[in-house]
Length: 161
Length: 116
Length: 339
Image (cartoon, rainbow over all chains, first blue to last red; front, side):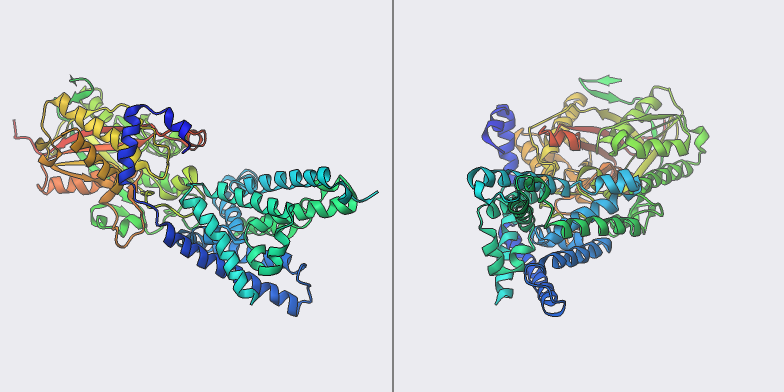
């Protein structure tokens, strides 16, 4: 929490928070990072393996192979989510299973499955982006701003007629 | 060799995410959003392509690559179609990921129930 | 009758005529599983949504409590209850099924004792012959509403608590033999500025301590009067903090046994529940199942149950508000000497 928020607390609250802090078990940051590293690394290796398969057997070039690779990983992740396995992996692996694109697919499919009971439109359709929505929104806005900056600082790249 | 680099770089990006969770107490949505913006900025500076060349899936599988692809699409169309490309090109490259995620999430929601 | 500043004494001593508890599969694997009346093997309880499952648990607990009391639902004058869902839908929909005149209450996880205190007051005042009090919660419906979809792979920190799936209900009557509800202390909101919804124990501990101290101040008793004081769902961290606060305030908690319902229901070694249990059902099923059984066996004669509630909503949390907390205490005492 930023300091300016701390200032609003009364002395009694501040004293209590210090007391409470002492009893708060610290998160096992190192172990969590190690597990995130392992699982994240393994998912990327699997991704690399799928990509090589597309390159060798389906005749994609390195660049083009990345799209179908991502699609396959997404399908795998959604299958695991459907069987109720991905959330168990997530508790163990933390960011290791959340940061790869499989985590993105998990966030969408888990929300879609969970809110199915509210109907296909307001449930599945609307709630699917509950967690993934911000990622798309901020990614898109950032991409637009970066494109604008390129236009301003490097007008030569703007092509077309 | 590329497998090793994929493992190391992919793992490392996940560690950054884990540090966001545990040290900065960020929510998953805040963490993913930050990583996407980070990926976009790196590509804007021209730094993400070398990473992909070097570590393959280690750079293209983590969510940072989503930001990279959004910028890539925008810049690509900016070059070919002019200023309008900054809008039309954004989803050019990421279509596979987003479409697959939407379609299969929808199918999953129709077919299965949450397990709890 | 008002006693002191915020406590009621029930001089007519409403009798706990019967109680019933229904829990989910995960609670059924815990150490208290033999104390519950119905253990569901299916988290969905045969329904097609978490919300319906939660409602089903409450309906079953209510019906069973009335049945155990040897009554029909027409004889019960009022049903007082609540849960964690928005607009307390689980309890209201269960009340639709039970067709008993209904008072819905919300006190987050403190609802279990809030409803019992109010039911005792209504019965004590002669406004009802029989009253049903109950509370329920469901792990998956709570996760869905307050946190993330159940299938979402988020990592819970060690301070997080596991919402109990279950429902507990009890029938109070004006006359009869058995356990009595003798007094209650209504808590005030205590907010120590804690904002982390994954550390509710720490947020709620001061409220529990505040209410416990108020209870003994109002009743002019010492903690040693009770064989057991239990808090609702502080779990490991909140329990440790509550002990610290008692020490700091020089409150003689050591005169009695002090436990927490959130630490009793699960097996920390075998079940992955981080800090422990939470939810309306946590204090409800532990009290109505486990503790009343121990009292009937004569292991305990007087207990004070202090249910704790964190009154936050997903919106208040996202708007950066801290977590207001509350605790309500109800004392239950064994057989009084025949008059």
